[in-house]
Image 1 (tube, one colour):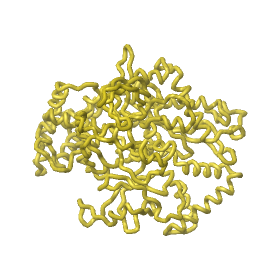
Image 2: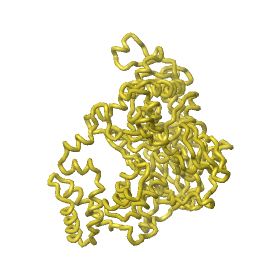
Image 3: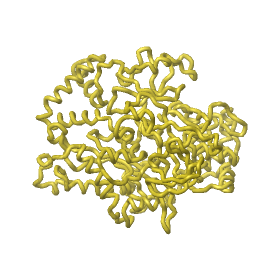
Image 4: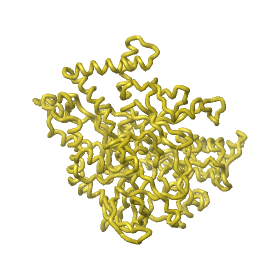
Length: 640
């Protein structure tokens, strides 16, 4: 816990922290002010640590461990929305270069030198990329630095980069299957034709080798070969051979009618967004809400999947294990718009998550998540108020008449079901319980070598904000306007009417993030301080409201003929709509549902703040003077 946690004050400003705790034998960690070397990982909850100063060993709780600070001041990288496309392509190229080396427990110089030769870069360069990526486990760490280029770094002019992409797309990846040598000659020819300095042949060949095999096979006319190699057979999924290798996510309405908190009358079915680990079938995260599936549902579910669950279990009064946290290598989803937002794609890329979309009209790709959802929904059919899964099953049963559970009560039941029943019950396909399969994947057994505990994120709020919707806006004298609402705080003052240094005469845009469940404040990232600041409504008389309630107010005013909306009109509209809802809650299900949605939003419970919206980042003293660490860690800005 941090110093701020002791006061239980809401967070109004903080510096994003994307560090993760490495929990492996030999790694250095910190508990309180003492630095330890991990001697042994006992289980999901505890380790044996040896204090580096005294040499004494002691058992330590995994949940209390923190990374050790160094004296090196991390250099803040630019915000992702400010990163140019060529730099993104270069980061992805570097990631493709080191990717074959990332899954290995130990990587020797021979392997690195062999890979460096294969892709045409210097061995030291490849080592540097590996070091930078492993410091943060983020592709952002591989973005070219802007402090100037040193000899040997191989920067390619933007225009030449575009020519290489063009040749790969419309020349190399074609059914004619030209050789790599012909592709090199074609790049040189086109560069000469356009008067562009051509990149070296080795650089071009490196780009060709970095093309993913699946893309190469499909593009060069080997569709059947690609299908046989990469399509999953029934009951299998390619490369899902260790925990968090592949996570599938999907939404479904729960087969139950819930009641509101006040009148305990029916308000309808909630939505469940569920994420499972394909290797073990463990539920890694979920999100339950009366809101229809959206980018927010995905953000909440993914954040909960990544973060530890101890406080979530306390919130829902469930005494059980849920030892799941960490960054998945791949997230596999359907083609819904909520998964295809640019913000979600960039966030996944920055976290090193490969986002894969289910091929259209090929249901076998989503079989694992659909079976998991089906298993959970089947258990719901024993609850009062169930809608069952078919009209035939529901015949003679009135779900609304029998509905008795509130969302809070149902969610407590759901968490208990996941942890105490689903995770513990033998799964027919894997031949054991999901929890046991997860344990084997992490710690290993006589036949399987475990991958070890995943790295634990240090800061909850940073993870959540990285996946929530973002906006880029200029800052005016009155503050910032986002979708018609104005926000202001002193933190904005230094940036009023700031100019864009890259485009003289144009105002600079800044990154803002918000939780759509409560738009009474947004988070502003100050690029010079590398900190987030909470910026409230400029008009403090406006109540907290969700984006959905705000949209209803705007629609009401438009129907009444209002053209230019202002704060007074919005306040009046929201007040009037809430009044009508309160009057109708006793009589109509729709009104009760809307009132309950508002109450749920006002709780402000999220994976980042399952108990209270407080900070969770502790101050960490340095041990660089002990000579234990020498890591070139590069911090980076907002994920947008």
